[in-house]
Amino acid sequence: MQVSEMPVIETEFRYAFSPSVAVDADGNIIVAWTSALSCKMGGLQGTVMARRYVPGTGWEELGAGSTSAFGITDTNYNQASRLLIDPLGRPTVTYMSTAPGYVQGYVYVRRFENGIWNGIGGSDEFKGISGPDAEVFPEYMQEYLSLGFTPAGEPVVAWTTLVLENLLSDFSSILLRYWDGKSWEGIDGSGFSPGVVPDSGFAGQDVSTTVTADGRVHLAWSDMWTNTPLGDDPLFYASAMPSGSWAPADGGGNNGILPPSHHTSRPFLAVAFDDRPILAYVRHHGTSTSTTSDAVNVLVKYHEMEAWETLGGGDEVVPETDWRIPQLSLAGSTSRVGMAWVENDPVATKAGGGLYYLEFESE
Image 1 (cartoon, rainbow, N blue to C red):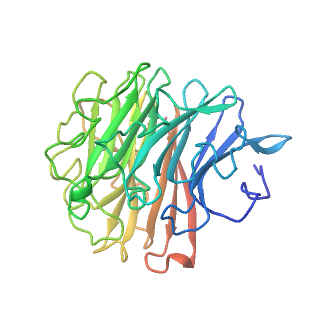
Image 2: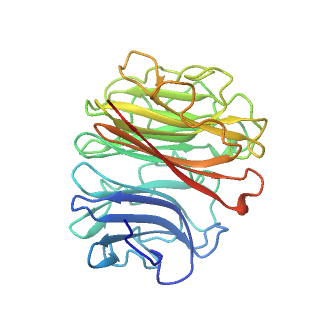
């Protein structure tokens, strides 16, 4: 299916990144992205924009001024964004933003209703949902932001944060907050530093979250900084009901949920089949991210108290590629799981690469 022969951005040449694609209740495609005047961010007027593709009409604004200088957030110091459609059909976006002259920033949320982008319980005002004790550093951590929804359609946001004095140390926090209809709440201490794993000191990265129909919140993260030597780079996972505790409490311990020989990044959670969590991740074979030969695996947890297992069996869904996999995405339905990923040369990243897709269908 071909929906557009022209770029989604038609107004001027800009640097676009952090794209999100979703489909609304009427089958229209919605694209959101963070846009800037330069690839070197540093507060150079980055803003979150969005457009909707309507068959027979073409690309149109998603709210007044959705591709203007202030986009859908009414600010132009945004440096990362994620957009999804909630279970009630409402486009929802979470984004990071900084103030001019500051390194640290905050996490915000807006929802599109009745033709207008609005915050939820003050989520687009002042210091957003992150607050004074949960700052983010968008220039360093643009990828470490994830969005999900409760069964009632309320947003769940997870992100990685650093305490400013620990910026150069091996410590960060995995934080998560959700809207309960009245206020933004954490789960078992997840709303404030030190977050989900208070005693670990892990440099938690690449956070991903999803929620199953029973209301259980699932969270995965890795322990590897981008473009650093490969060492012990575990994959961590924990889940909790909103009124419960994270289990396992330490995300799987020092080695995470996989054997120590697994050097991982880019975890991505989704829900599929009989409302089961699906977890994809990149596995690095090599000594550093500049020489790695990456593979991809997809795990499924059929029962909450049982171990993860490879979807479809085997060791890896995508064997070693001899290339670097900088990004992947996952989606699921009652009968299928679809996964897309990018491959490029680990050294000559401007030499091009490829976009790939695989699908698994249950019997």
